[in-house]
Amino acid sequence: MNPNNAKNVDDYIACFPSDIRERLEKVRATIKKAAPPDVEEAIKYQIPTFVWNGNLIHFAAFKNHIGLYPGSKAIENFKDELAKYETSKGTIRFPLGKPLPAGLVTKIVKFNMKERLAKVKKKAATVR
Image 1 (cartoon, rainbow, N blue to C red):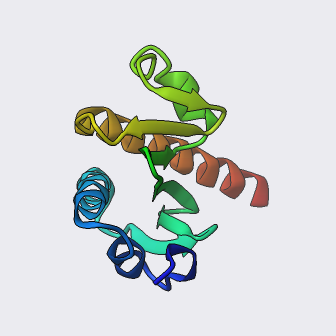
Image 2 (cartoon, rainbow, N blue to C red):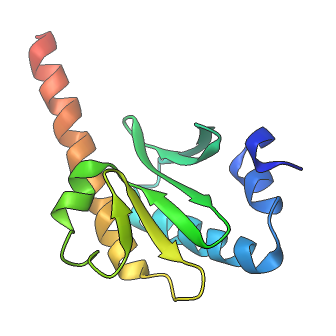
C-alpha cells in the first residue's frame, strides 16, 4: 500500500518497513500520552494528524527522517532545544539513526495544546 492512500493512521504506519513502523509508533505513542484523552487521530494532508480543537500536530516518515509538524510557533518557542535538528518554518526532522527525543516531543505537544486553547478562547470571545 502507498502511504499517500492511507485511510487511517494504522494503514499509514503499516506501509513502512518494521524499523520505520517502530519509530512511527513511538512518535504516535508519545503524542497520545501527552495529548488529552479526547484527541482524535486522522489523516490530513496525506499524513497522520492529531486533532484537538483543530489540528494539534502532524507526523510523517521519510527516507532519512521522521518529520514532525507542530507549526511555526512551536518551532520558534523551542528553537534552542531544536538546534541540533534540521528545522524549517513548520517542520522538525528527526534523523532515523538517532533516538527520538520523546521529552521534547511531549513539551511541543503540550505547548500546542495551550496554543489551541488560546485560539478557541479568542474565537469564542469574538463571537459574543
